[in-house]
Length: 229
Image (cartoon, rainbow, N blue to C red; front, side, top):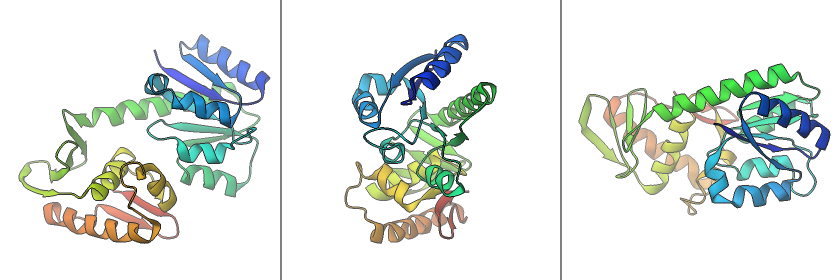
C-alpha cells in the first residue's frame, strides 16, 4: 500500500484530500505547517515509507518553497493557490515533479498521483542489483564506476562528486535540474561542491562519459540547468 504525505495548513482541504486518498486505498500522514513537516520528514522510519508528498506552498513557519529544497528522494506534487508562471517555474526547478493550482478537481489530482507513482516504479526498475541503468549507461553504485551496456570492459571511475551528480541525473532522467537543485540534493554527499565548481565537475564528468560511449549524455539547458539525455 502506497503512503502519501499531505502537507497542507488548510484543514478542510487536507481532510478532503485525505478522505479521497483513503477511498483509493492509499495510506496518509499529515503535517499542518512547514515546521511540522520538517519533523515528520526527520523521522527516518516514516520517510522510508513515503511514496509521494502533496505540498502546499503558503505554509506557516517554513514555506513550501524552502521545504521543497530540503526534500530528497521523494516525488513532490505542489498544490498551491499561487497561479503565477514564475511560481510554477520556481517550484518545478526546485524539485517538484508536478504543480496543481487551487481550486482543483480531485479526479485530476488522483490522476496526477497515479502518473507520478507509475513513474517512480519505472525508475525503480532501472536498478538492477548494485547497478543503476538508464539507456546505455550503467552506474555501479558500490564502486562508483560507469560503463555502457555490452561494453563493461570499458569503465571509468568517478570521483565522489561526479558520482553524486550522475546518480542524481540518472534518477531524474529527461528532467531539467537547476544548479541550485543539484547542489542542494548532493550537498550531504559532497559538501565540497560549490556553485563555482559545479560547472567544472560536470565538464569532467562529460569527458569521462565520452570515453565510454562517444555521446553527449549531459545537456546544458541555457539559463536553467542540466539534464540527462
